[in-house]
Image 1 (cartoon, rainbow over the protein chains, first blue to last red):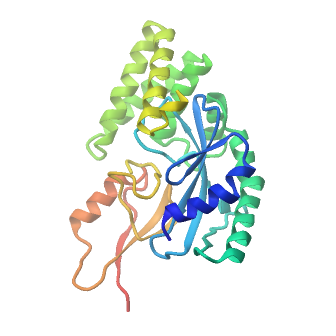
Image 2: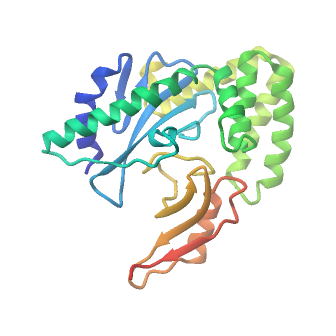
Length: 222
Length: 66
């Protein structure tokens, strides 16, 4: 199944039931207005089974600069239902199956997806999720996100604690993970801005938000 | 990709055929190979570079159809 065929049906059957959600080609439905955190559903087709697809719900803090979607904060809808792995099967031109599958997907969206998105609206919510719900809160991606979130909520002392520890960790592990060098540069920048002026650090995070939205081709939400 | 879970088809990401455990905390990875194709040390290294931190040493195995 092509993602575009699936999304034609999703837009027809599910999108009208989700007020304030918009479609982002090819596989995303996202909540508006978009503030500091993008909240969305991602429809993933399988490459092993051409009739199968699954649905992710996720939140992406836009102030962590990134040129692609990241699903770390969230999960597949089935995981919220006793940790089940659910792949729905759908094929074009089968109206009965289409109706049944889309009803079931919408049930999962209502039951698990929307409540999740309600809990991850703000930087404060993101801190809560990382601390209480993530499987690996010590992960450097989560630590970076948490540090910037603390800047935005005005807890500069905690932000600086995390940034300082994280920077050392990143430089230590950089030989094994080259991408950590870039993360260390960002962490260092926010740390130095924060030490000079919290307003400058906050301004930088807002600029990164807009940069991320542009890279995700969501510039109309800036 | 770079220790994060990303949508299928994201540029620069690695896609593996099967994972035991959650994508953000994999425990074992299988790469499906057919015919004369082999799981090379370069491919294993490429996959490891993208794994979440702390999961770098999980087994990465080749699997073949019977």
